[in-house]
Length: 138
Image (tube, rainbow, N blue to C red; front, side):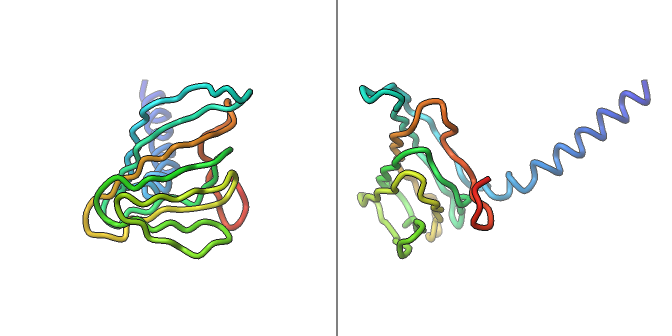
């Protein structure tokens, strides 16, 4: 019984250690999935999500398997860094188009929560988000 407890405890410690960097990278970010539907274009679907970023929160650098249309809903200004373009800061009511496969990140540059409505037109069955590390896709 002690051996089983020791193994379970060891696995839990390792799992927490592996999950910590991911949790830190996404700290202060909350995703609220609204809807997901097939489109009339074969192999495509639309996904809508509200993404809330706490003060100072920054997303990981990532890509999507299709286009993303961003509409800033409320709160603090959000800064977007999109591969090959200068960074842009958006206030509520402003929009941004992110091309398919473009590496990008978002950051809350204000002192209160900010939120966006993200609409993705993506390849069905693909992961919605893929992290990019050191210039290479993960």
